[in-house]
Length: 165
Image 1 (cartoon, rainbow, N blue to C red):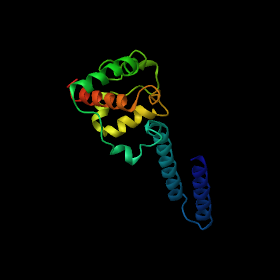
Image 2: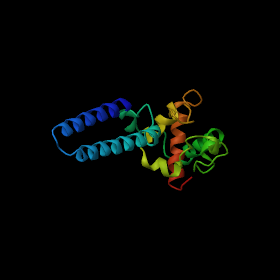
Image 3: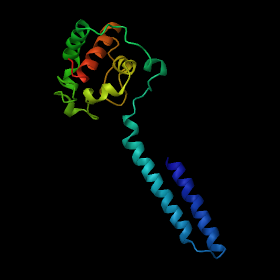
C-alpha cells in the first residue's frame, strides 16, 4: 500500500512540475494529489479495521451449501446445547451473546451468535466451528468433537438464534 501511495505521489509531483513548467496553475494538480491522499487514507483505514474481521481462510463454496445431516429434533438441539455449555460458553456466554467471562479479554470480542448465526448458512457455521477463525480467539474444534457433534452445535445455535432453545 505504501508503495502505491509513494508511486502516486511521485506521479502527481511530476505532473505538477510539468504543469508549472508549462505555465499552468499547479492548484488543480495539488487538489488531485490531496484527493489521492484522502482515498489512500480511507483504503488504509478500511484495511486495518474491516479486513481483520474478514474470516480467513475464506469459507469454500462447497461449505456454504453443505446440508446439516443431523435431524432437527429436540435430542439434537439438547446434545448441541450440552456441548456449547461445556466448551463455548466461556467466550460466547450462556445465551451466545458474546458476553462470556473471557470475552472481555479477547480482541476482537466474540460475536453475538443470536445475530450472527441467522446471517450464515449452516455449512458456514460448521466450517468455522471445525477450522476456527484466524485473527480471532475462535479455535478449531475438529480434534475435540466429531462431525456429528459439531453439526449438533450448529443445530443448537440455530435454535438459540430462533428463540427455540
